[in-house]
Length: 328
Image 1 (cartoon, rainbow, N blue to C red):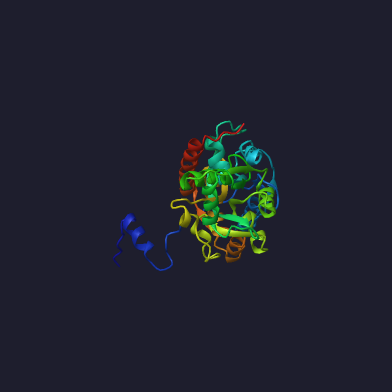
Image 2 (image 1 turned 90 degrees about the vertical axis):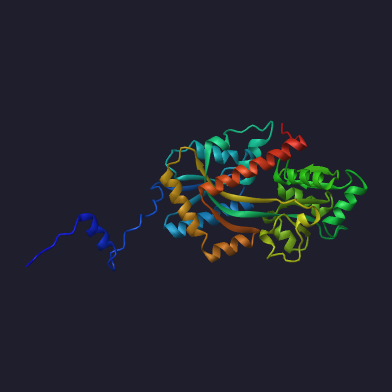
């Protein structure tokens, strides 16, 4: 009996095409063996904390690992970020990073930060877009943004807008609004979105443009009237509400919440976390819970997330420079 021997390379190519002999795909790297943590820089109960806990639960469900959320408040989230930067470089601890902390604070003259988010942190995965909206007192005289701008044009600095503090997205959006609509309004900064919203409800401030997650309860309860959306991501939830850009062409604001790691975080750990977040966000229950709180589920991997950050830094830097905003 004659026997023919195929060359090894040809044999390998032939056998790979046989049924049941598909080439094995490389597995995603595993999450670090250490206890997994997400450090949240803001108080429990807020939108930032909510996102951290939802994604921790989601990653836990898909990985079979417990992910602990720890709140370390202060310095606009930077105390939590610093804890991550100073942690062992094994990728077991991430920072729940928000747009303001990552793209506004670093551009503000006078801002004192324990770390540099541009150098000390790396993007791991975006989790959700955070829609913004313009709200007024429900029982007040303003029915829409056109009413607000009409009053502002009639008497400079007579209309006031509240914010969560100097240099926040709420403040800077108000600065953009004034410049683009050619009006002058009075900025009233507060120590957080909650007290700002309370004064809008009480009539002590006329309106504010803020994260929808912070005022969804008041909108649903009839205490605040949503008169404009910052972008189209929540249009399906509020189909009758116009966009800010419908009144002020070109004016758009949308935030985000994601996960960042220390700059010395191992690449396999970055890829493992990103893969777990992507898989977690495919869960319909998680998606629903995010949307119920004014958030739009959106996975972006490290490269796309980094690109979003840099574009936002440039955009906010232009606003800060034009308005001559400084924190002391």
